[in-house]
Image: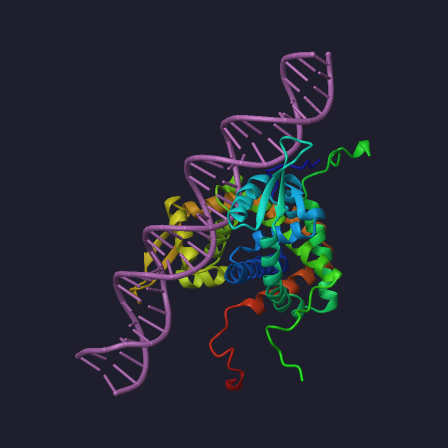
Length: 168
Length: 168
DNA sequence: CTAGAAATATTGAGACTTCAACTACTGGGG
DNA sequence: CCCCAGTAGTTGAAGTCTCAATATTTCTAG
């Protein structure tokens, strides 16, 4: 009887799977770099930082607790702390204490941050369109959304109890 | 008569497009981080560095000119220089002068580098399978390959003459 | 009510990336 | 032959990210 074990001969990727995986690595590498460069040039910040401002701009009161913002953007709290520190230095975000939890901090989008967003959003949307949506058929767009949703779902840090299916 | 201009009202993303784009950002962020962590833990290097070794291992003589390696991996020569310096320090890659071009350098996969690859490849393949292939239908896998191919193609630094269509 | 466990957020060090400047070499026109 | 524009690759500084350690506050079992 075969039991799963680390010593098993691994199932290598087929030729076709290798092609797909390589395409994925190439595509994401090029697109990430492209957007980082576009935003660094036009907005003075990398894509992640821009995305943080976008998420804040859509939150109630344009503010979010650090941990929430980290979860919404799929990054670690540590990374977020450094990023917010930089954005604060630029005057685009400000920190505020949370009244109900003395450990908590809000990241708040400033007026200046919002204006920077307004000024640079058109260029960013254009870049995303040109690189992605303008090149894909509606079916491909739909498929991409579903595929990425599945990948993200599988890598999401587990919810409480999610790994205890017998409790559900 | 409307002429294209930077001052035009931009075509914002539709709700559906926003969902797709957000899924893309989330999925790629999570997957990149996941693989970086997996490889950092099991192989002592980030995903890109591992990928450099993989590409070298598949090249004739297990060696490539720096510029070729940079192109195969879609990264800048500068980034590659730093990366190879680190891999050289680990003894996984060695540099060799190019006999026919005194400016040129070969990056050569060492025996140690190859063995590291052999030792860590199963775990990496398993991680890619678990995160990607095991979760997608064959149709989705195929679609992903095509989509990423299109994206990569559109962002590829232009070939000579590619922007001079009247010469083709 | 209190001690310990868990959560929130930050910090600093080291690793990685970017950008621009730089050295060294090549190849083609005058 | 020589000039010089273009190519190959590297470097250092500044910015960003990771990881582990830290301080502080909240929650919870007892």
